[in-house]
Amino acid sequence: MTMTCASRQSSSVYPTGSGPSGKLTSPFTGGAYPIEEVNMTETRLRSRKSPYPLWFFLPAAAVYGVLFVVPTVSSLWFSLTRWDLSTAEFIGLENFRQFFSEPFLVKGLVNTLIYALTTSGLKTICGLLLAVLLTGNIFARGFLRTLVFFPVLVSTIGIGITFTVMMHPTKGIINAMLETLGIPGPGWLTNPALALFSVALVDLWKGVGLATLIFIAGLAAISPDYYEAARIDGATRFQQFWRITLPLVRPATITVITLSLIGGLRSFDLIWAMTRGGPGFSSDVIASVIYKQYQAGFYGLSTAGNVILFALIAIIILPLTMWLNRREVEQ
Image 1 (cartoon, rainbow, N blue to C red):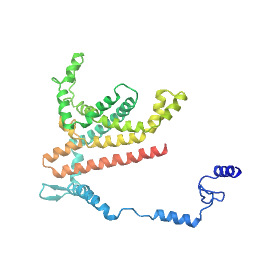
Image 2 (cartoon, rainbow, N blue to C red):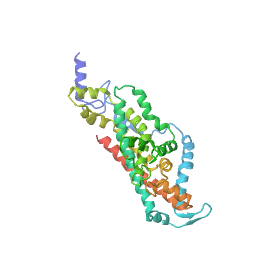
Image 3 (cartoon, helix red, strand yellow):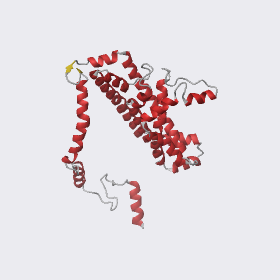
Image 4 (cartoon, rainbow, N blue to C red):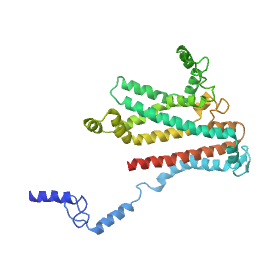
């Protein structure tokens, strides 16, 4: 009995793995490991090679090189040329200078940033609120989850065409419903000030289901014990949300923000289906500008736009992801 108590006292004074002399000790016997054996073990672990041979990674590396590296390098080269699909004349950075000197091209760049920030912000906020609602004890919770996620599975072009009809200024069902309430219906897609934001709302309706699903997975990983302890301490619902839910759901938040920003910066199909960049250039984004330049035969200029879009995504996403991950570790 005395030895057992002494052993417990020793383990409480000296943390597992260290003894009175500071040497590495066994948690079972209390004896010190030889320093030479510990060093050899650490060296062996550091020098341990991958269990897979090098040739095992070659197929994936080949596919990656063919589908990503080669097109990327080719795009960088063609963005520095004036080419017509048969011959290419090297002109340096002229395509990039022209891209940033044309007002409608700069307008597409600005619209891309506005669209990406708007859609990612709305998807993050609405997705989190819907996830909190759909993880509670509400009636028909499973059906409502399916209803929220269903638009994600529908074709983007089909959704774009459908909402184009619904948002028609004179024949659309949305304005017809507003008129029955005595509210004049706006030109959702014909007003230059509303066109881009109207498409952003449709994008929110289609994409919020995926954000909600990610947040539901994040909320399911939070232990109910935290909320139980908070309720015992007298915390309100808002305090529980602010002090428990938001911090612990941060990994899901990072995922939603990253995916939404990338999707917003690369968005093309929904905008093209609904407005084709109009009226005028009011809803043009970089992707639609690139497509229009390619249709007009300016292949070098459109390739330069692709390079700018790639650089824009990398410049925004990489630092943002690093900053969010660092904040998560600090907290």
